[in-house]
View 1 (tube, one colour):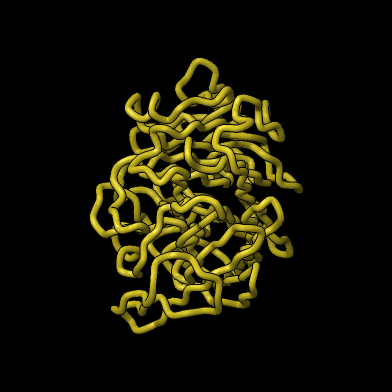
View 2 (view 1 turned 90 degrees about the vertical axis):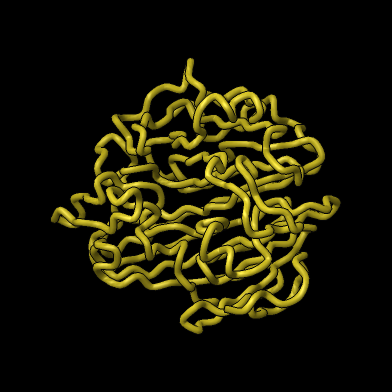
Length: 361
């Protein structure tokens, strides 16, 4: 396996090699830039590898300068995961008129992020790459990881005024199946070793209660009076050691046609980040499993709580949960997700006000 050539920092330009997989296939890196925002992408997992904003020296996401880390401890960092993001309990679900046995890649009992060969651990095709946008695609065969239907999926990354990184995911299938993709970047806005100084605010009025293996135990519950109530905003340092932060926050009962602001993240010394999405839920995970190892961007390894994953999606175990948003993709339909990460210089500006959009559903 070869390492990525050249410096770690983001420099706009055409596709370059980011190394080769053990089977000899080449992974490509491309950088898009506009409006003071630069984003590096790699075709392994359609991954966001680096994000930089003019006026701030630090990278804004966790990433690695070489391919090897993404094949080990860096699995899912920045990737587009699916065909079903999050967990499916018991690695089984009734899909397309039959009970399907799925790949049990989580604890040997559940399906996580589409199985062991989900899109976050596959080599995507680079379809096009221009100065401010790039598109990647993948094909999942019928029966892949146990899911019915041949699926064609594409993700289009674009930098739009704001500046914002817009992520548009589309998919079709030739048989009834389930479809739930999520971008899995870990955000760290101030460049410190952990996210304790960050302030997070989310409009969600409900959350998914789960068991010790993170499988839902029932329908969404009110966040009121729980540690999952982020509606007024809270510093991460006040909650990181109060229990695992790995929760599906439910925003609406179904996917919206237009992306709305649902959450904000900020830190002193970094920009404010607003999340806009069409998705009905968002998984929030504080990186508790990170334990150091391979050097990340800037040369330091990532330890516990080094970044906050904000993953708009349908929600965990939705195929087995009648009260959850519908994850079914039918023949002739097109799955469409729009998620934007919008940056505003000035740290915590505006974080005391609700983000608006999908609150209270």
